[in-house]
Length: 264
Image (cartoon, rainbow, N blue to C red; front, side):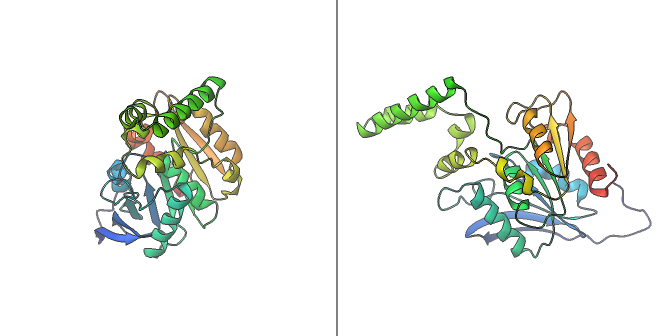
């Protein structure tokens, strides 16, 4: 994407911290044209979307925010689930007078984008390494969860606070262990959210971008989303993982640009 040497374009860039949906929210916006909103993944921030932001700001009005609980934004006042984050996105759209946006999401941000697009007008959407489909638990995993819950209950009722904290620190995913304060129960709500029942309600054109070595959101999830969304296509980045969009930023941006121009 190149700017013409014969034209001068005035670009408006703003960094703001404003209260949105009751939470102090940090975001940046730049450019003119159709609105594009970038939605980062869990444990990340708006800076992880910088390469996309910089590539498209000359042709679109691009917004990138820190979800509540991440980056420079405040934590939510209570534990949120994905529907709460979707309502936050609705409030952000209304606050900035955005109409029929393009959504670009990674991982957790895709959960929010899917829920938003299933009930609100969206022009086009790109989801990379999209979380949102809950895999079926094996019998072994079910036993582990029950044992953990039983141990947690026993230590809590017997007042063994230190051992309870040790159990919580040593159990669960890295994201769970890294979550602090209200973000830990928020994480539990988020990972238990399943968007499968609403995938067929997403009517806008969707580009799915996946690394075939993704272990956080395995490729079969992208393949299932492609089947269940009425107007979706899947691009696979061979040899890459959950952060394929970031590792291969130039390639990702070119593929996204082709999709947005309707040339795919």
